[in-house]
Image (cartoon, rainbow, N blue to C red):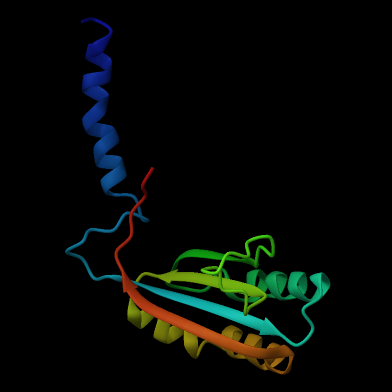
Length: 137
């Protein structure tokens, strides 16, 4: 029992800290906004893919309103019929709100990124959605 007491006392503090985590989302709060972009490159070499990923990180990852940022190259070893293979690089940005995403769209760094890379894209597909997020294990 003596050993359980510290754990029992610490549990409410742990739960409270998880609930107030900046990445935890209350389902009753304004939903986050997911912006997923899939780039199909004219030059789909490993070097060109790596350069676009680096540019995404350098120009887009630290803009206001971003809750989560990730980008990377498609895993070419996944070739099942359900794996979309019509892209080379993916970008995933979760914004704190739709209005944060709207501000991102007209941000000078985003506009410069698009201008810089537009000619290198064979195609771009964008999937936007409202999401509720939380850490899960």
